[in-house]
Length: 242
Image (tube, rainbow, N blue to C red; front, side, top):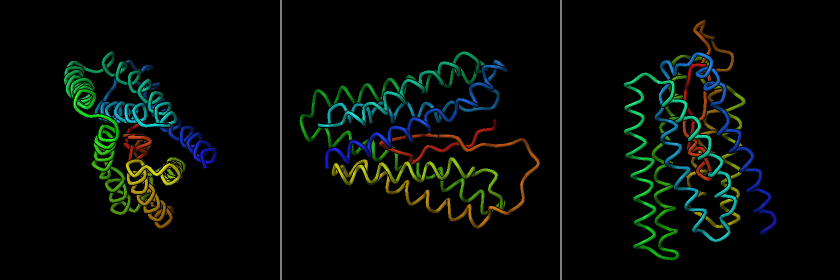
């Protein structure tokens, strides 16, 4: 069983890493234009928040190595993305980004880790941090629902690229299966929700895949969140113009 769970976790790491890499096309555009244009830093601030707490959860949880590795990878890329935002965003966006990073990525993350370290021990600490991570992911469930609503309203799947939608669906399923194997309800609940939302998006895609396409500049569905695993995807999806 341990061998199977490790193998499934490695697959989950690979899929999650692809999600963390998904905004690279957008940031390559930012680097070329030396401007963040109308892009928002909030998704990357949010992802840094959740990946930091999930990494801490994996660190304090027995056999949480695979949870730590994928989220350390995610943290690294969020730092890269946010650094570019601070370098090339207009003054008002730079100030806003700095304030939000200080409040959530430094204050909230640091305060949560410090408080749990000083006041909680053993399973209590693991359960509290796991609950916070799961709650943050569930709060992001509105993103895929909003995208689905947009597709139904426009009768067009231009805002829902099939490959990324399918990968999110598979990624959630892999981490949900991993959670069953290691008996982790916090990873399991969030990724089960992500899996069901992914299935819903694929059904909607199948219904509207032959719908009209807009002549506007191409849009891509990128990782809003990733609140990625083990928070999957609950769901890191963001509409960004690329």
